[in-house]
Amino acid sequence: MMYVSPSTGREIKAVLFDTFGSVVDWRSGVARDVAAFATHHRIGLDAAGFADAWRAKYEPSMEPIRNGSREFVPLDQLHLENLHATLAEFDLNAAEFDDRDLADLNAAWERLDPWEDSTAGLIELGKHVIVGPLSNANLALLLRMALRAKLPWTVIVGSDATRAYKPTMEAYRNMAWILRLDPGEVMLAAAHNRDLTFAQRAGLGTAFIPRPTELAACQTGDLAAEGDWDLVCVSILDLGSRFADA
Amino acid sequence: MMYVSPSTGREIKAVLFDTFGSVVDWRSGVARDVAAFATHHRIGLDAAGFADAWRAKYEPSMEPIRNGSREFVPLDQLHLENLHATLAEFDLNAAEFDDRDLADLNAAWERLDPWEDSTAGLIELGKHVIVGPLSNANLALLLRMALRAKLPWTVIVGSDATRAYKPTMEAYRNMAWILRLDPGEVMLAAAHNRDLTFAQRAGLGTAFIPRPTELAACQTGDLAAEGDWDLVCVSILDLGSRFADA
Image (cartoon, rainbow over all chains, first blue to last red; front, side, top):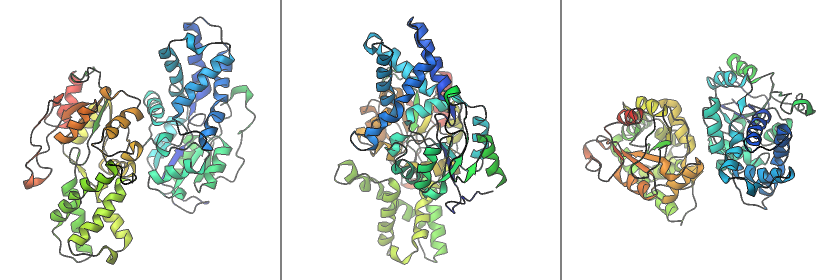
């Protein structure tokens, strides 16, 4: 009833998940709320295109914080800044909307539905190990997402506690430190090979779960495992069963 | 089905608990593990006296961090430093014990039993609001305590996320900020009037639950509410019923 990571040589005591894309379907959820916002304000908008444009600003917006040229701010704030920029890209002026409406649209990132195997898989895994997110999202966002989607996390530690954004080494190592675990006792489960590459470099165990429809028809990457990961699974439920059988 | 704090005028969305003494019985739990340590090492020790002496160093050890003369370190580390000092007080030399044995004894603070009403009360409260600790303990400690004692917290935010020790204003306000709540939407529930005084000053709602046996026969303070608290309850179960009936 314990799983030893072949790469770290340690018993895995916590399986932590990349969240956006790996546990929840951000693209459909954000597009749904963008469409509702557009209807409410009587604007014509390509909701999925808007969601993609908003998400495209996600990685670049963390970069100044990763490289130390900007102080840490929580993802909520980056999402809001990126929303303003995305509105401008779509020839809309953020100043013309009520701040509360923009805050509510910004909260689209916490109203995301789990992939169909996620909840059952997390429940199974939670019988064997600590289960939580290892996301760039802050606790307030992850908590509301978990309450709405009934994600059965054992514990939620946000990036506002590690004060580091993946894929910096600190993001992975501070998380292990906060949990008082050795990095080798922690496994990252993710649908993104890049995230796993850096987690492995930080000394964590790794599990890949493909989410080939995360980016809908546009998706060309992350269709299969591209590294030497401890586990390659077809779903979180499958990952749970590996721990049940270990 | 919502409770509005008469002092903050806001709907309470999270009830957060002082933990040591208010939710769990630290004195019996620590004394039990001190006794086991003494037996294992064949030392004669007054286990309850040792627990009291160890705990007596708790407040003073946070003071340099509160006043800014020492950088924040997690409570685990303060507990360990205080354990070394307590051993010395009992004419024992920490260097004569294995570091792993001392780390295990230090973890006595996470092997504490809830008061008999705590778990049922937290379950009831959790149907209505976010329920979590607002403790000086760090997340790793609170998580292990929760897993062992099956405390049904909605979310655990440790003092290592607020990076502040009660009763500084930051300890209460950073907690509300991390949860993305207004301080007036958060209620502190505690058995200690002093903690409630500062929480109220920070803008939080307040609930008093007496724990007249926390310090066993020695207890003279905190036998009754000494401030104008929103709620004065006889137990956490009673507090839960107030939210159920609101």
